[in-house]
Length: 314
Image 1: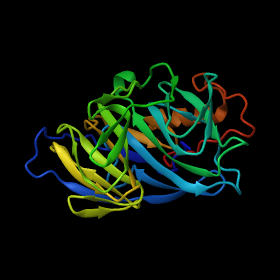
Image 2: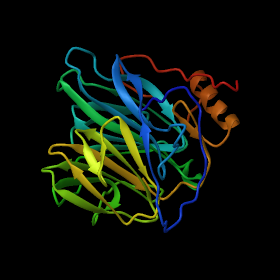
Image 3: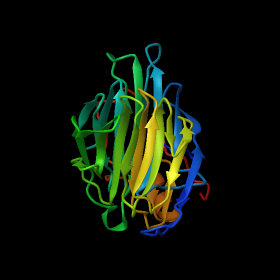
Image 4: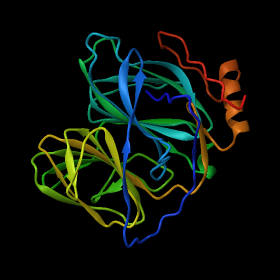
C-alpha cells in the first residue's frame, strides 16, 4: 500500500503557537488514486494546501472495498528511507514481507509499524485465503534529522488500548491520548486514535494545545462544532485547542491524528523522504541499480519488484 504517486512534495517548516486566540481550521479535499489491481484509495496527505500534520507526512484511506472478485492488494517489493510506515487495519487481512526477514499478517484492530531509517524494502499483498472486505489506513511518519539514518526495524501490535468517552469507543493506535498510551516507538511527539460511534451523543475530546490535528471520517459522517464532515474531506485543526466537541452518527468511524509541528523541511519523491534533490536522486539510482545494501532484499513475494521513477530534475 505504501507507494506514493510520482509528484514531488516539499513541506515547509512551520511554527505553532502554544496558545491561539482564534485557532484556524481548514477543509481539505482528498484525491483519488489506484492501488494494486484497480482498488481505489483516497489520499489526504500530502496536498498542496497541507504537507504535514505534526510528523505525519502521508495519509491514505483504503476502502471499504469488496476484493472477492479481484487479486486485492498486490504491491511488489519497494524501498523506503527516512520515515516510518504505519498501517491500521479495520477490515480484511494484509501480508507484509520485508528485507529484515519479517513476514507478518495484519488483521482488523492491529497495527504494523515499519521503521525505514537508512533504508528498507518491503512488499504488501492480500493472502490467497482472505475476507472479502478490505478497509484500512496507511500513514507515513517523517523521521527527524538525528534519527533518519537509524537501523531499520519492524514491529507488530496485535492489541491496542481502548476507552469510551460519551458515545465513542476510542482505540489509541499511536502515542499518548485520553489517558492511554500505545506501545509503538516514535521519534516525534504525536498521536493517533480510531473512534467509533456507539450512539450519537456529544463527545468532548481533550486535545494538547501544542499539537495540530487532523480529523478524517472513515465511515458515516460526524459533526464538529455544528459542521458536517464526511469521508471526502480532512478537517485540519491548528494549534491552540484544548478540546473539540464531536457528534457522530451511530456506527460512524473517524481517525484523529495530531502532533507537534515538524520544524524541518523535507523532500518526498515516490517512497523516499530526504532533505535534498541530490540525496533523493541517489536513493533512486541505488534502488534501480540493485546495488544498495541498505535496502536489502524481500524474499517470498510472488512477483517483480517495483522500479523507482526518475525525478524530474534528472
